[in-house]
Amino acid sequence: MNTEQARFNMIEQQIRPWDVLDPAVLALLSQVQRENFVPEAHRALAFMDTEVPLPDGQCMLAPRVEARLLQELQLQGGENVLEVGAGSGFMAALLAHRARQVLTLEISETLARLAQHNLQRARIANVTVRHYDGSLGARGEAPFDAIVLSGSVAEVPQPLLEQLKRGGRLIAIVGGEPVMRARLYKRIDDASWSQDDLFDTVAPRLRNFPQPERFSF
Image (cartoon, rainbow, N blue to C red; front, side):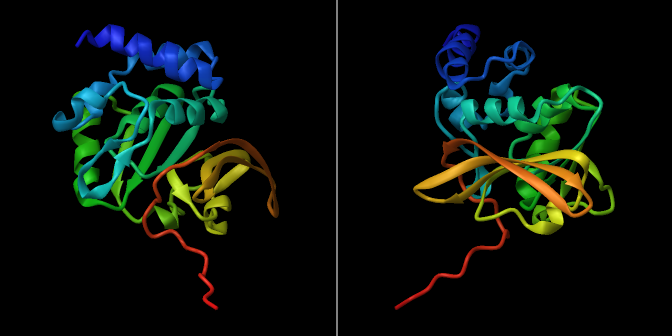
């Protein structure tokens, strides 16, 4: 496989047509080597328009979803960012190039170790990986300029929204199959947040987040 041609095709045929047009984001996707964050057994899937299996039954989001989430956060380089769901560390690597500091939380110890290894190998120094239940956020390090949920949730818990600074943004994929939406929340003041639905997609659930009660008749 011609790796650079495959990377170029991923950007031009999957990511750019999905309204990812920010030149800085597109350049970053050329720079950060996604294949080095993909398990060896699935390396052939690194640039394909699909989720990539990870240990513990988890997966990397499809490249176009990662890119669109990153673009919609509109990071400027000075932010303190929280990610929930480290996975293999790839999204944290992208965030690290667009923020001052990234804390990424991973409930799976296996994946936390994998993400740490991949980020160290990529020589990314401004990411802290923590084996922790991300549904609780990281109140001790809050408030954050931006929060990213790298997976889907039925709804965003209020304690996470409360860990944003005024003017801070949280992006998440919200809802249940077959319809989920990427949603951007912005903190207006101490007691209010705005929200904006961005695009439809489907993503695997993050573990330990509250699920709506199911009614039986």
